[in-house]
Amino acid sequence: MYKQRATWQMFFCTLTLSISGFYPHPKPYEYPMISFEYAPSYYRYVETVLSDASDSQEVYMTLTSAPVAHKLTAIMKRYLSYDWYNQTDTSFILGNVDYTSSNAGSVSGQDNLIFVLQTTLNHCWANAYCVGLGYGFRYLDNDSRHSITTTGNFGYERENYLHYLPIVLTAERLFHNQRFNRFQLQTKGYYLLDGNQISKYSKLGCESDMHNRQNTGYGAEIIARLYANDRKWYYGIGAQYWQIEASDTVRIPCFDGNHYGNEPDNTTTMISAVIGYIVH
Image 1 (tube, rainbow, N blue to C red):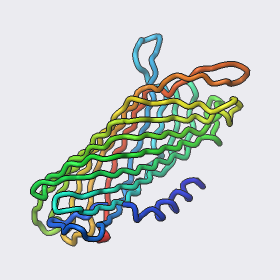
Image 2: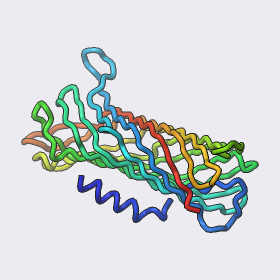
Image 3: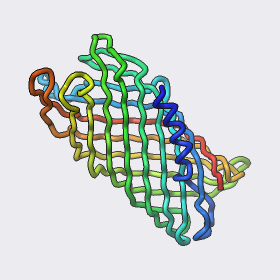
Image 4: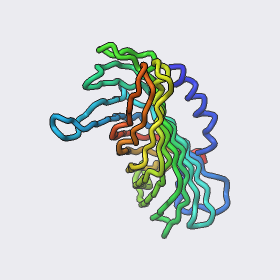
């Protein structure tokens, strides 16, 4: 829990990095438009391994939000001209997760933290359709060092670093009613450039931690937003999915012998409700 408190402080220190100014006719070279989002989310991470008995992929381990994950996002959007803009999104996803494994039992209340920094350069047509390309970084820390499962297995900390290429498609439509005046639909595709998984087995008595490279994977995200007439508040829903293939296999000296390990095939799913506020 101490990590989560520290991370909340980190979030408020990085608010200036993030947004979505959403004005129908933005003027170039103005100050950045900044907004903030809060998204309570359902989070589920699943690892699968090849079963010798069935010769097919079977679920080995799951992490599920308990009860929800809290996603905090700051967005900074700066127009470079009337049809070009840069957008930087900074997100923290905080919360506890419940661990369940087919071989290692279960335990509840593990600390789970995800940090995402993403920036894109976007080009728009008719101020209604935009496409963007950029760079993204995703960091995950799952800390179960103080956990013991129902089968007596000790937990450990694992860190994951992903570098990826984001492709963003945005469409907006203006309309008028008593409460809202604009609808936005945003889809994002993520192509994994490089990944690194660190499993901190040295805390369990091994001679070193296990480092694995993850070279193949992709992600996708979709977000729908409705903007209120006051041009300050907006509301939406979103879903995100990641699939990362199994890493390389490495040797790790452990318990007076050489052992080999990898990071299995895994998927991450998030479903969110979104509430946002545009600062300016």
